[in-house]
Figure 1 (cartoon, rainbow, N blue to C red):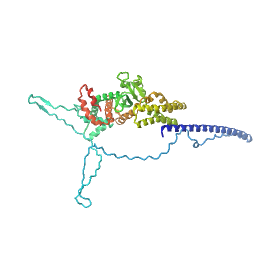
Figure 2: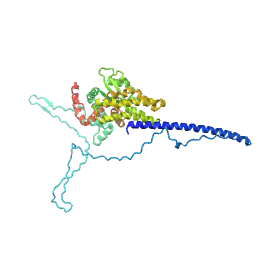
Figure 3: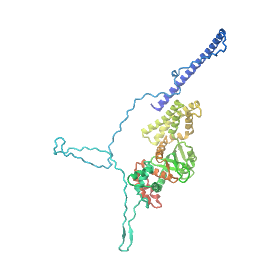
Figure 4: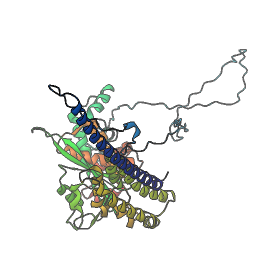
Amino acid sequence: MTDRQRIAELQAQNAALQQLLEQQVAQNGTLTAQVQQLLVLVEGLQKQLAAWLPKPAAPEPVAAPAPPVANPADVPSLLAPPEPPLRAPSKRRKPKRVPLDAALPRDIETYSVEACPSCGSEDLAALDTEVSERLAYIRAHVRVRRIERPKVRCRSCQTLSTAPMPPVAVPQGQLDPTMLAHLAYSKCGLHLPLKRIAEDLANQGVTLPSSTMSDAMGHTADLLEPVYDALLARLFASPLLHADGTGLTVLRPGQKGPYRGQFLAVCNDDVTAYVFTPSKHGEHLTAFFGVGSPDGYEGFLVADAASNMNRLYDEGRILECGCWFHARDKFVEARPNAPFAAEEGIAWIGALFEVERSADEADETAEERRARRRRESVPILHEFERWMDSVVPRFAPDEAIAKAIRYVRTHREALWRFVEHGTVPLTNNLAERELGVIGRGRKAFLFAGSDAGAPRLAVLHTVVRTCQRLRADPFAYLCDVLPRLSVMPANRGLRLADLTP
């Protein structure tokens, strides 16, 4: 059933319920009149009976009979949503076994038949080979990289020289770039706290103090900072961005109590960057997007209707694009108190997504999608607004359904933005998914260790997550790029294009 059919069905149910309500009201009026007549008749009978009977010393008052009450089971509830149709139990699909990747290395084991199991003869003729493949796992292991650089003396001039030291990321440290890559990927790619990483290394005979691991993470983030800046520059060159934020607790060693900072996820189709701000105040966002600066961001920004983002749109260089999933959530929250109105509002929004699904199935270009939206989505939006105008007078302003309608009306311009631009999506789901990376890590490591550690965590998450989105192995990328970053010249900006994921 399409959302338009669902809207028609809800409207028909609403009309039927209105008719039933009018019948119940009329029936209630008739019953009330009958009760009044019976009360008058009982009162007259009581007077006649009192006249004929001798007056007792303390007569007890005769209670009036209660008005008849209809059986609740016979009156259908006007607020209960219609029962869903019975559905056949879904059959769980078994996962389909896919062949193992041909690029994986293979260790071949061959087993032969030495003698016939039936007669014991060793005169056997080879026919064919049965092959079965199973995934094996070789646990990661720690090795020591020993670098030997012999010293030599020139027999002619007696000059001493030593072979040059290869790039090692941490010249005076004890950790190889591969170990730095392992720590960064385990922390930001697998969301493991440093304590668990240390426990796994301890099982392999390596003891790393927490301070050493923290210093190594900080040094890795410092090396990756120019890559982080290059990724931000690539984002700012994009005509459309998604953004969303979430909180993160930050410790303050030596001070009383932690504070609540914010991680902002900013992303486009291939790059995700995380930005840490000390609070949710709007001035941090305006500074990041360069509001008021000639070099600030200019383009579309798909975001939630958060109040701390309002100043981003004051200049008009950043155009706000609303999220219809957030508008839909407002109607979902109104289901308990206004089920039929909420379901109808959800169906209207669902009709907009049906148009998008049709465009996706047709693999339309941005211009074709824009034409379809103007042709199909605009009439739906106008009908949706007329429906909201007819519904809102029936509810109090503080009811959830009225708040949902007020949300759509307040952010009408941002929610309608997708109609005129084929590249603007209806939702901010991309930023929501990318923000889930911080949420999963937050459940594991709970907090950032210091004011300096939180921005470094943003750098590491940015590089690792962008590698994952580009289907590049984060560990292999870090192993390759960290030594090269450590020996870059001061004017290394000219080479950053070769070092980004």
